Length: 299
Image 1: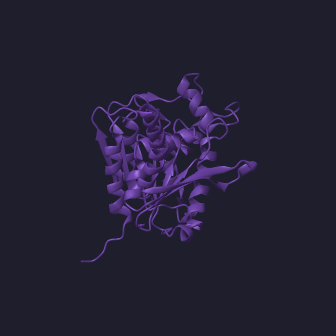
Image 2: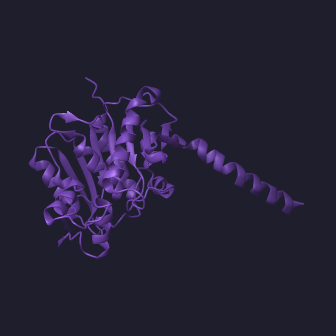
Image 3: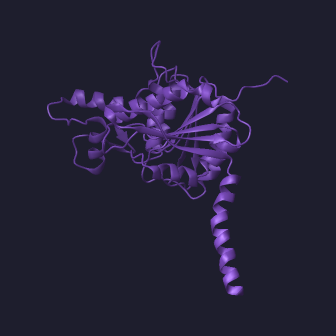
């Protein structure tokens, strides 16, 4: 009798605990909201709305890793406490999945991401956020696409309607001409050469001149596209990252500073790709975005 009561108590705890935990979360997650349908393929995002008081600001989170945007990437960002931290601060987070390298090239993923940013701006009133105060975040491949979106929103005086007010990223690839200390050869059969070909040349490189190949690689290298109308940037990168060299953040910070754009790099000593305590740096990133996105009140 006692044993059966014990098992019943454990069963009730097992069933009730997840619901109780969900009630304690600082956000409500709305899954698989369709934001675009290129070629009849649905592209989706998850929206995390704060359970407490909203601060009226939205964050676009590029959910992509190794240029794959399956649902596991959102789970990774949950483990890093991204949505908990932003939700507790009152942000509404739009976790956009821009498609994967198995189907889309980098320019196509960029176009998908920009369509998602436009969707967020068009639905700003619905979510009670300011469309002119968006933050853009991402990590690794998501950081690459975030950087690329931020520096290509404006071309001279022309805007494509996807500007954001600030961009903060973890360990992003930014330069596909020089990766660490190695020049990149898109014609190479090395693993990285193959990745660059899939990102920049969905139709292959046969028949293209060296100049044409170099031009296409630059188009997907945000460090080569910096200009003075880009938003402020924060980079957080580990100095023990074996997947994306620290040089990739350093070169883009240098390019942004050269054209007068505020750019900050925080180096995580011993940090890999990522690291176990990355939630601590997520909070640093969120605090930096507070300073960029939240309106200052006069004393």
